[in-house]
Length: 91
Figure: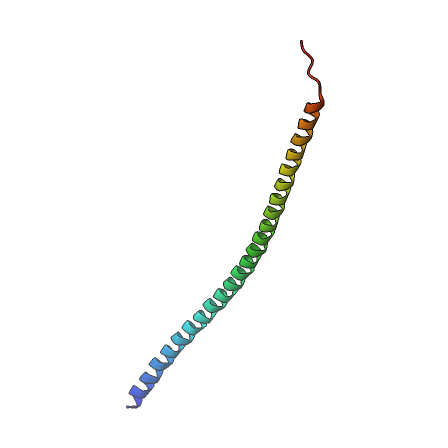
């Protein structure tokens, strides 16, 4: 019986050693996953800021385009008024 107990103890110890290594590997994998998640979170935050900046720039471009459209319209009106006052000379 003593041999059986020693043999069993040895097997349990071997299995515990394997389990300990597997738990350590799992812990390391979880640490890497946490670090990867933090990196992803950082990148998503940067993307959010860039998209916000792009949206603001697009709004500014829209406002500038509207201002240019109004300026061109006003120039057309001004040139039309000038044309009304230029006499046409017959050939």
